[in-house]
Each structure stands twice: as C-alpha cells, then as structure tokens.
Image 1: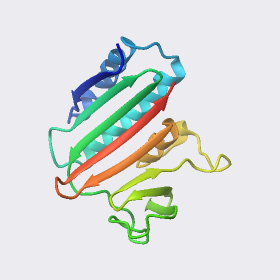
Image 2 (image 1 turned 90 degrees about the horizontal axis):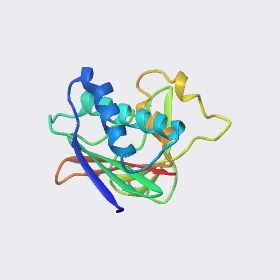
Image 3 (image 1 turned 60 degrees about the vertical axis):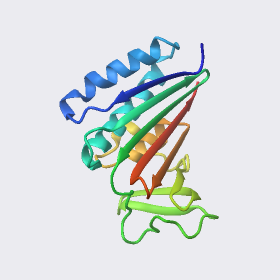
Image 4 (image 1 turned 60 degrees about the horizontal axis):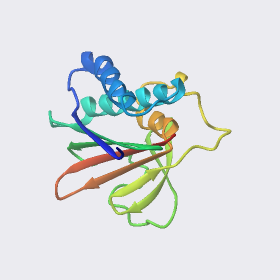
Length: 173
C-alpha cells in the first residue's frame, strides 16, 4: 500500500487556499490517521507553500507532490521562476562556501540559519529553542520560517537550467 504519491496543481487564487488545504489534508487522511497537532502543522505548511507560490512564482502551473510513506510524509512544491533571493548582506546562490552554516535574511527581522547542501541547495535549520518564536504570533513574510518550525526538515533547491525552484518538506509521524 505504501508509498502513495499524490500530484496536485496549486491554485493561483488566494480565495481558494482554505478549500484547497482542506481537500489536500482530507486526501492525506484517507491513507493515514493523524492527530490534530500533525493536521495543524500540515495545514500551516500547505498555506505557506501556496501563499509563497502565489506571491513569488511567475508561472500559473505550480504543483505539489505528496509522498506518503508511513511513518513519513514529504510535501514537494515545484515552481518555475527566479531563484530565492536574500537581503543584500546575506550570501547568495550559488554558494561558494558549502561547508559551513550560513546566516541569511530576507529582511532585518527575518533571519535564518541554513546549511548549504550544494551550490544551489540548502536546508533551513531549526532556531535555537530559546529563540524559537510562537508560530501563532508570526508576522507576515515569515512563511519560510513557519515551514521550518512546522516541519521536521525543510530543503530548498534551485535548478538554474530549468529555472525551477523546489521546496521539500518532511514530516515524521
């Protein structure tokens, strides 16, 4: 029965985010039972991935692929567009130093630690538990940070030849 793969197109209408998220979660629940905590985390991740796509993708046909492989769930979003850009003071893709943890920011108050996994690939690292803010109190533009907090692993990869962004989120149940 496992693994199960579900391929879905992302709506490009903000009015459809809630209904879409509800339907995706229902599709997942058809295959595995999840407590309300995991359901909430999945909803937050989906909302942020979709919102990010609506705001930043220059293509109408962005997709999400779910891979359910008990006890794991992977959510992969693929979209065409420009590579992720950080504030001017941060290292930029392609990374030259792939051996050390980097501190990047999207704004003065939105900072992340990342671990490069290659020139165009990195993993968002969890914040220090003492610095960990409440996901419920996050301001707008903290979507990638919310995904980092809600997931067990969050990886970004850019393919310069295809001009394709891939966001890979893993949850362990």
